[in-house]
Amino acid sequence: MSNVFFNLSCSFDASSFHNANSVCTGEERILQYSEGFKIFFNFYKNYYDRYEDVYIVDNTLKDISHLDKRIKNEIPANVNIIFTQKNEHGKLNKGAGILENWMEVESLASNYEFVFHFEPRLKLKSTKIFDQFAKEKKTTFLSHKIKQFKTGLIIFKMSDFKKYLSQRKTSDLCYPYTSLEDDIYSFFEKDKKNFTLIDKPDILWHDSAINTWVEY
Image (cartoon, rainbow, N blue to C red; front, side, top):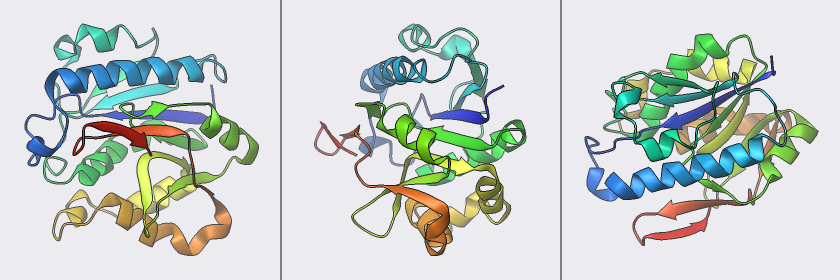
């Protein structure tokens, strides 16, 4: 078994989101996931030979019969796919949905040393993240120009993952509204000696406001 639990966090159907008008939905979302998975697994196989340690966790669909075949075609055999249907707070706050995801997989991940959280609508441009993690083996955050940590990709040491979850409820991010980026920054930023901070991760993110792929 690998010592890394790969958590590919998904919301395949965003139509019920409170802010659905401001996120990609429908055909565009399907294609983003399909391409994102293809790119991720092309890089993944250069470092790991087991797909049993990869978990795709969706909080919007009932089961795999509702997943578009173009997405399924990009998922290797032996990858685990979980449909939680737990998105009560995620509909209100995307970050709360990620927190719901983490709480759902915490027990599954507890036998691993690290949790590699990734949102596969992002596009990896290179193996930079894998290379950096292989060198340092620490909790890893992506920096932001403001006082936040980006949450599309985070690598947690298991002790850090459990510590954070033990002190959080999903409703904490909704009432009052708090972004996960802000919350994680405020929780970890005083412990800088114990984590790696990456400034330019070589990842593309689709900015739906301008319908353009930009550096993440």
